[in-house]
Image (cartoon, rainbow, N blue to C red; front, top):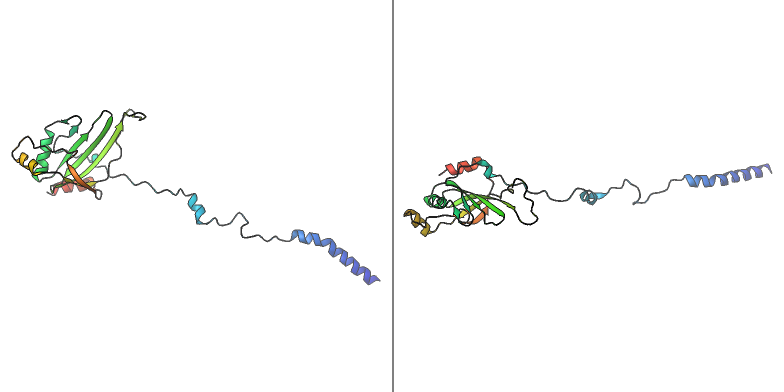
Length: 204
């Protein structure tokens, strides 16, 4: 009888502890649970911006302050000063090197394109241009009108016809070369520093 009571007491004690044991048992976590899961490479890409960097602007040869070989010419309704065109023509037909500058300003707004032309003496020229625009509706000009970033460096062919060469040989009226228009077949080239251009001009 005593043994029976001992067994009965042990069963009652085990039954009382069973809910406690179940409540404290660890819960197995699935593969998708938890805050420390690896977000993977796509998550890091989404927060990195994702856009490619803008290319660096070209080296500004206008800042080198080369002395023009002829007076800079401005083309608006007509070229000014007119004597700059024969000077440019004699330079490009003479086979030497030099620096030409022109400003194309057709108007009526401020739509200007400045060209810097380094004549290399071999029928080609190193060319860089820059632009500035203002005056159209919705455009803020500001107190100082600044130039946009200059163009990439290009090598262009000089347009020199037999008639131009003959006119310049005779010092005739047709001896005139337009720096803003008489270049063709322009193609991109590696950038040149001020020192590089100086060396090119001195090579001939």
